[in-house]
Length: 227
Image (tube, rainbow, N blue to C red; front, side):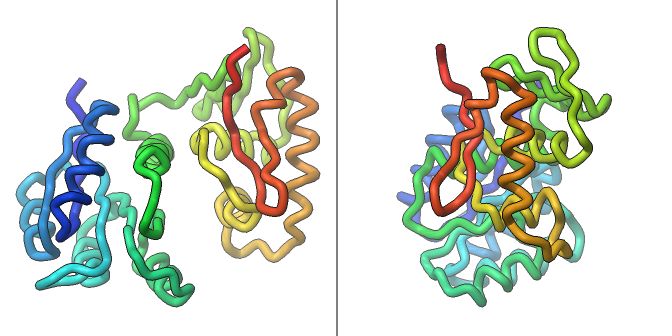
């Protein structure tokens, strides 16, 4: 199978190398760009870039302008990196169609986990509609979950919630983020609905319900524990 190509755009060579090393370790092919103009040139030359990791503050053309230009022609997933943490910047990123927004400094391992999660969501990783997470098999095409070959009876939202957890393994997810992605941005209900669904989901998963870890004061993280 051909390796998935990721475009890493940052004016700092050390940052590009750090990200590249971690991504290549996971089997990705990395294309580097040193500024916004270079990024656009390489994006259009390569034609099969699966995901872009894009720094905001760069010479010649900043990350926002690169994102605007790419969004005119492509829906390729974009992860924005920035040292700025103002809410208005994050909101601008999402308005422009950014898929993830990560503030510097960040953990390279978390960045790689987010890359994998986005590629799974867009069906670019292994092309599989079925994901096995510690013995929990989520078959998205059949909308079915099995444990040790036994089908687990889940409601529609429980299935969507479990799928989101599995696709974001090892990533801490706030209740707000879960609401936005599983219940969609137009949902204005109480975040406690998540806790109710998680409680039911854990119960239905039996011993494997412990994979859903509570992060007190924040939300949840799906993490397969080795027995």
